[in-house]
Image (cartoon, rainbow, N blue to C red; front, side, top):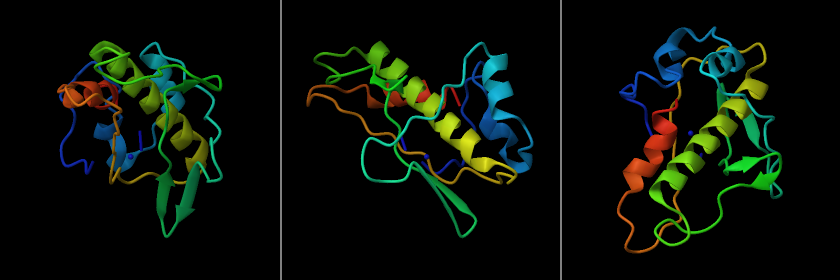
Length: 142
């Protein structure tokens, strides 16, 4: 998962609703995650020769996040073949958690005004049609 232009708030009331508070983000990301019963993982290290985050010109760029936990790729395979839609949603949620972990570790004393873009990439078979449902795993969580 990398960060779709957010011109609307996700519908899911059970999510973290972080995007509702962005304009005046003084919230503690770790606290928000833990208040919903999740644990914010340690930010994953890059798997290649790139930076996980880059702050420049008042923008924080966060690299794509994989469904990694404790250095291990948790969901491997292709949706519609080795992985189900529910597994894809869980993978997207894990990517969102890793995104929040990167964000939490990078903000420091800076205030976040707005999330400009969130992108999701899916490895799926040509017959798979539930892409939006899978990405909702991240959107509904955020």
